[in-house]
Length: 630
Image 1 (spheres, rainbow, N blue to C red):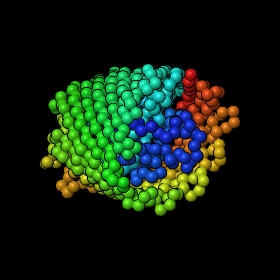
Image 2 (cartoon, one colour):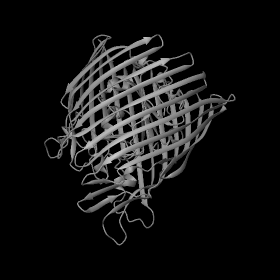
Image 3 (cartoon, rainbow, N blue to C red):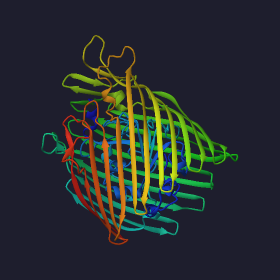
Image 4 (cartoon, rainbow, N blue to C red):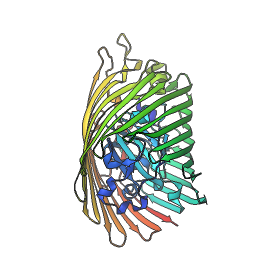
């Protein structure tokens, strides 16, 4: 739990290939058509979701709109295979297949090809990922390692947020909302064209989230106030060449119960150029820059600049092989300020990550059997070189059935937290990093099956068995002294589980989506380990979760959507399980104006979702929203 103190204040792909279906049309698609939506995160090229040799969930723009979500983490709840838990008003614990915490570090998150994990602790500061949800085309969630294509930290999965191109957002948008917990939201956007081949959009937004409630009553005094603006430019220089230039800036204040407000600010700029030689041959070059500043009074302050260059080449090898290869070079520099409780040594650091990858998909039997082999070689300046291979097999015995299996290896690279941090109380060092900290790794075995038993019905089951080595442990000093604890790699784990989904088109105007996830984790330490924590600091995970969503299209352009979800109790520290209900009533007065009324967490006045040092709970809430497009 000591590691939670860092967060308490607190795929490389874009949409270079347009989806087959415009987002505004998604609500008209059948269950079968939804399965044919293209995804790009599994193999870094476009392929049908139903034919991917991986456990993948696609959250469409229509899913997000009808969920009533007001933030990216809330939208990610739609993928029940993710454990999404609210830590406080702005911090979220999000993971796939276990090891969840407020500093969860085994899930790689990308927004339009820009990796948003921080080398400070290999996780995500979710409070500053304030994507304008009206601009999200889809979110591709992959469970299981995909490190061959995406690199270090894609250990348990990848979340790839893909926004719409500027061509898809022409015209004006004004959105306003207010409620009991989401106190105020507002967004303004305009999209236009510079010429026949170049489109643009600019936007600005503001979001004010109220504080959570204390378990014993009263407010936790930790509201989030965030303002953000940005632009996107998409163009074509020729029939073969296309480019994207986009950027964002943000500034926010985060309330604190026992100290002054946390100040966050930053910006990013991304450029991408692609050339298409044929339908199966292309080249893409992407560069992005990201600058962040976070000041947590009495704890720490960080200035960080990150530069990343990614080059990808796709080309056919004969008639039956599709090769994707490339390289990535990333440099991240930081300056960290010390405090009486958290010390970084050194206070300046430069981390470099270089990798080469190649993956080849071989068609063994056309339209029936495919084999994918690949590997990534990655170099981290302090931890050395690691290899991350994968082997995947896909079999379609018929047009309605699909089997797949995979064996993959992935690693998590060491971070500043692992190597350079010290948590102190007065003159006493409680916990410290180690320069000997090395890669964490997993060897994952996966099997999956998809079935369309009839019109309007789809079923999927994905199973996994993962073996982890060199996970983070907290070792006591020799001689039996309690402190300082030192971070090391003496924890190991085995996990297994299953993820089920059943979707039914009950009527032309009524859809039902259901899911169930089971997860089990066994931890063990290396012989001679002195860690007495039992590994609880490395994740607090429920055994099971389930959800049922109902989407109804009513007369007079009305919509009634309900979302019932359950999360089992968390074992250590213990948090009781909970079942909650969200309901949304939407009314499209015209093609331009939409009103919605949303009730969230309606079954309880308040409930806890994740352990915190000062127990905080999520409250029942109601809010209304109006969106005008013209």
